[in-house]
Length: 347
Image (cartoon, rainbow, N blue to C red; front, side, top):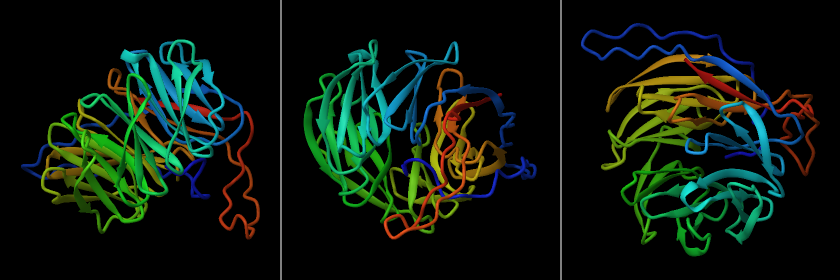
């Protein structure tokens, strides 16, 4: 995902429910999501992915050059994983007592101990490692390079490099079907691809047009539907078995993340403009945009807790945007120190 922030965007849209269901159509689930908790973290620096560990009841949040570790029972910061320059993604493997962190500035993956939060190893990766995924079926961790089109593949138990998947293009968020197939968005080619978790061979390339520059990806294991969140304010729904595009839904500006809650059949995209777009899966090929729920400006990544069904995002107060320069033609707004926070939404 794009580290730090999106460009300045208008503050969140007003909360609005979609019109009622058409006769014969399954009614959309109610969306009484509201802000439950604001967890003050503080410190300095930008942010990217969040990751929920339901077994350990912890939330991991990328922040500057470290990962913040939050206890989900107390809503307190209980530690940090330090020295993660250009941190993007975090995944944990509880059975191995290991966590994995992609560091985009150093082209490495930091492997850390879940109990002590100390670094166990630092593994070289491809250029600009960004998203990552632990696949329980293959027991592998996949580290996706946003530049160079490759995935460095590690043994989830040991952290040893076991291969490299050549995927072609700027790789973004992944998903797994839990049966040996990994899916991932290719941002610069507007595709979602499928590859084998063991052989690492690419099986399919599915076009996402009219969606452009897909980042966030979520997956419904029951219906085999992929949900690709695209930069041009579209969520594209693809049948993962056939590649058929079954729906295109409008979403908010500045999207970067997408999450799916199978208990309510709800897809949520996190939009940097300051909204969650909430979509209900009425059937495998029918979807309803239920609401654009206000969050806060800059809150563009998302994680869902499968135990509580709560959604998490993060942001900070934003200051003025510096003038454009030759070296930085698209400057992002400054970040007010000490204001980084986690937002927890639920019913």
